[in-house]
Length: 228
Ligand code: ADE
Image 1 (tube, rainbow, N blue to C red):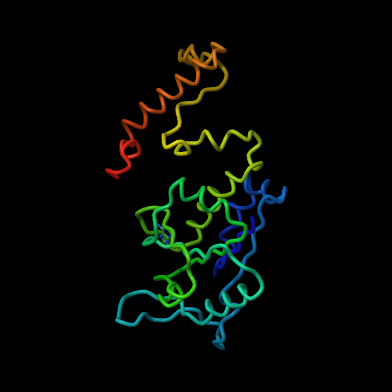
Image 2: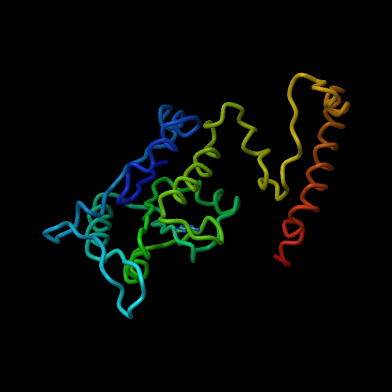
């Protein structure tokens, strides 16, 4: 999968993309990231990329010209399966949405900063608008890092244990059951006997019960999606 990211702040991706699972996924060529800076496409003599909003609101808006020229340049070279804009007023990201994006080969993610981007860019170029939750952060970059992490970890082969992503919370519509590791007894607290029984039928049954129990208490909306 090739993920192209348009950002005024490419340095913000250092760290999230250079450690742990994403780092290994890049090294093993499961995913390639390419960065583009809209500022490089600005025709303004000071390379300005933002301006005051019409209508007198506070804050600045990213101007259409650098973004439009950048997108036209990129789409003239490659076909993108999706052009995604990260925004708090987008569709709220969930595991099902992540799974559906994972089928794409090449995507472009636009990151707004300041008050957002000019609506005409959204109308003309953007195919999907995605929010990582009902709160506002200072720009799209951290949201994009979250989105990419969720995406990359489910690419087949990226996680060492290929079943691991399938047992994540939400993959089966339930929260994940508790997990334990060695030692079996730790400061007076012991691991549930069933997990050490070697009986995989019983272990699966126990996990399902615990997952259901937790989901019922913490996220009943997942059990009754229509009531969300
Ligand atoms: N940009 C600012 N807040 C955001 C959010 N919650 N999701 C996606 N992009 C954002």
